[in-house]
Image (cartoon, rainbow, N blue to C red; front, side):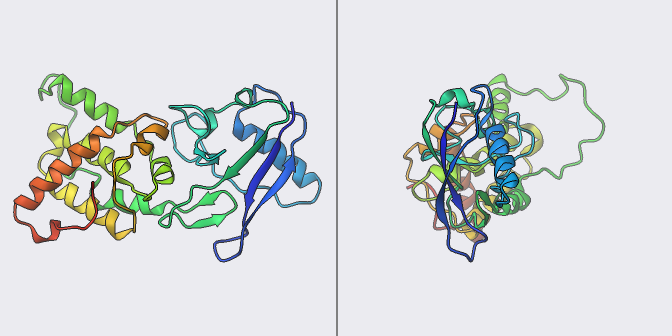
Length: 258
């Protein structure tokens, strides 16, 4: 099979960009989308052209690095998978496929399809950790954890921080990402001592990075490769409200669910 790619090419964040068309070499339908880009890049390099810059790492749907908008949808046409888990059999011979970077002001473009997502790192550094000393590994039943909490914590912990939620949101909101990182620690006993300090710090950092407010369209949940539920946003907002009621003036913010 062969496809026509319309790929966003941009030298750097200060240069103008444009969609450029490329005819692919012969492809196997069993190639992943990233393997297809590798083949196209090899073809471009052999012709003396600059290869298409794109992010990738594990190629197993674990790391969240492979962040592309394919035909207008973050990570491509399917639900619950990352770009690297999208295969060329999802398309037809002769298809035209538009490939763009994740677009959001807090994700400045570096080159072509690569964006800078260090804003997520800074949010995580603001409170996505526990500092309580836990000592040696306890016995499995030493700290009782309700199964419902354990299951919810595991669901939230699946977030790979890819940024698809931001790219899909009309407001470029990061609420789904932040709520997952807040909730997976806040649901566990070890995360309780810093529970409200954590939510204040991470939400305030999210606002400082310039992410937009949540208007609960559900687009974030729809494109999340790990299918994180927007219920976690409601949970985070409740924790944030408690933090405000505890009387810390630093908790007051302008963003959040509308």
